[in-house]
Length: 104
Image (spheres, rainbow, N blue to C red):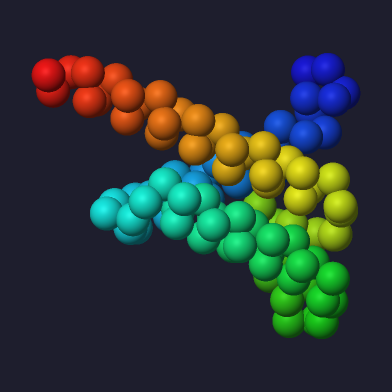
C-alpha cells in the first residue's frame, strides 16, 4: 500500500467500525446521535493512550487489546476518526435516500 494509505486507513476504518457498532447497538438513534457517540468513543480511546500503567499496557500488548486500545496518542488519529465517522454518515445518508426511493 502507498505510505499515506498505510499510515491513515486503519484509524479511519476503525472509526467507521465504531460508527457501525453504535448504529447496530442503537438502531433507532439518529445518524447525528450515532456520529456523536462514535466520535466520542474514538476520542476517548485515543485519549486513553496518554495513560500508561502496567495493567493497561499489558492489555495493549495482546493482539485484541492493541487493536482496540492502540499504543500511543497521535493528533492525526483524531482527523482520521472524523473522516471515518463522516464516511459512515455519508453512506447512511446515501442509503437513506435509496431506501426512501424504493418505498415509493
